[in-house]
Image 1 (tube, rainbow, N blue to C red):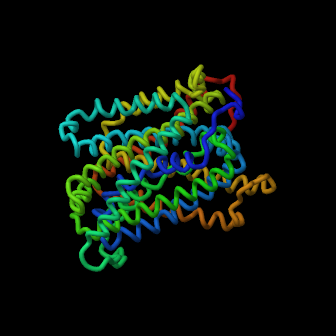
Image 2: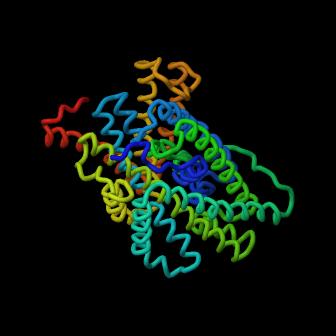
Image 3: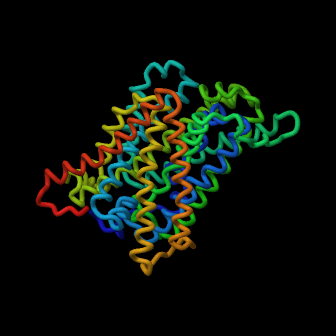
Amino acid sequence: MPSAASLKKIRPIQLVAVIFFTVSGGPYGLEPLLSYAGDHGALIILLITPLMWDVPAIFTVLELNSMMPITGGYYKWVKYALGTHWGFIEGWWTWLYTFVDLAIYPVLFVQYAGFFFPELLNFQIPVCLVIIWASAGLNILGIMPVGRVSVFLSAAVLAPIILLIALGIYHHSGAMHIPATSLKGLSFPSFGMALYTVMWNCLGWDNVTTYAEEVEKPVRSYLVSIFTAFALVMVVYFFAIWVAQQSGINHDTLTDSGFPALGVLIGGHWLGIVVAAGGMASTLGIYTAVLLSVSRVPQVMSEDNLLPKGLNRLHPRFKTPFISIIICSIVVSFMVLWTFADLLIIDVTVYGAGLSLEYIALIKLRIKEPLKERPFRIPLSVTGLCLVLLLPFIVYSVALGGALSSTPKALSAAVFALVALSSAEVAWQVIKLSRPELKLKK
């Protein structure tokens, strides 16, 4: 593997764009929120959930990454703090969640492209495969091309949304107002699915650390870039949902046809086209950025003899883990048959479990190595950290409970996610049996 010094490195402006796409990619995918939460519950859920779900994750990522800004990110942190067994579990869970997450975006791309060419909906699988393998090719070229493309696509995503928001405010007749916030009358299953929708649109802060050695001045760059990206995400989300409320669009129409339908309502067919193009750019950018992050995890797990050796092979010219990228792309190619709602539940459930191990690693390292250098340190004691980290656990538990009590289809997706989580221990036992010469530690 090339040394960290020999790798081409991206700068903060490119890192902001990559983080933006890894975590968000714009409000596309947030459309079902109004159907689940209604006008009175949508904004309060949209604003409160990230404070309880994202902020603890962001601070955890910044502290751990400042201690260990290395390739592999969260996998390396958990392995160092909790041992090889739990490091493997973390890597496996995150690999699974990312396969599910990646499968969502080609499907969404086809839905937005269908605004231009409705006949594409009949060729969803071939179009999805083209996107998957084109993104694989870009990732094999390296992090620099991904960073440049992410900057370009960020503009292509934000420009239509800014235009939509501006025209929505300009054309609105009457006084602008924020609907009274209330959760009264909101059923528990709907509340749970609303939480899932916001959680899914705000997850992945830890994923952006898996290529830390390929970032210029990683500690400072991540600190600036993550907070910038978080502020950008929340501002875009708030105004997109607020303008949708002011427009009076039918909630089911927004869920079924997405923000392009809102564009048509506000500015006519031309604005619908522009917004649909932004949705296509969003899904492409997210897919490419997430593939960049996940491809580094099997690479470092292979170097630790926890996955087959071939996964850590680097491209002779571009020095990228091309075997890992290809295998990830093969798996995702088989997962684009799932529905969006099912993928969302599975995605957030598996991701939340992996995130919990990172929280435990943070606490363990505070206790075990309190004097270890931390250029960024959360200004809380161990007790304070434990209390704050209860917040994402509460959100996660409520969302999962809501999904389990909703439709039978949602229940089956949640059960599948729990089965997928248990597969990590099975895989660990297989590795122990097949490699007795390795003294793997629990």
